[in-house]
Length: 343
Image (tube, rainbow, N blue to C red):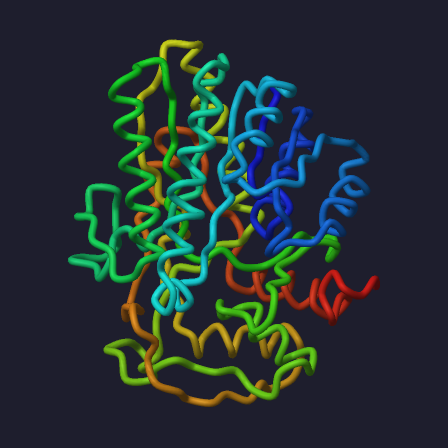
């Protein structure tokens, strides 16, 4: 199958690209490298021992996106390209709407004249907002607490309306909880620009000596130890879920499966301090922490009911928190400056 991957040089995108190539599919990447490194793509080629196409372009560049679609003629699309930092979206929301929502419209416009009607969308558990009940299943009411989540919810709405208007579409809305970890090889992993917005890369940079201490945002939540609880899921499990979703889409054999949401999580919650302790075990040393105020838009506890994905396309998470921490430490230990420094 020919699979077009937007944002394919990024953290989740590069891991998914590797799974796509390993499974024997052809791939073409569109990425502007704003929060990614070309080194990640080089390493994926080495790990897979296979090549793929690459268009360096912004997802909002109509001409470039249309040319990539016309030249590659994809049979399926996995759409990652988006800005993703919750805190930054609260401080400066307009770039998030312009990049995430408008960029998705550009991509869908480019697909209009193509035969491709198989689409896996990188959504987020932030579309659930502050939970009414736990674990969260796909029937949970949708309500966002930050602009990043609002862009994901708007994109889901666009895709649902598209599938309703044209029943030939098969669209999987993949609502991630908290992807962490790295490939077992230690060759590709999470390497954010500047100060990490997410917990795991920040912990890893503290462990390797790039940061003095882990900032814990809020220790007064109603949780087991006062720190926020999230459903962390290994990035390799997330990558494999995309392949399962694409197979589900393609199995419609052109008849269309509509637009369906699927949670990607483990079904288990882990607190910030529990994750810090697990990473300390992985790297063999205690990690200092600093308690700071809560961040705007954060909620106390989120964890998934991921059962629908297993029932519908046979996927479930297989790796646990210790696997996540060991693989993340293996990546950071061998790449202390990320992709800027070859191991």
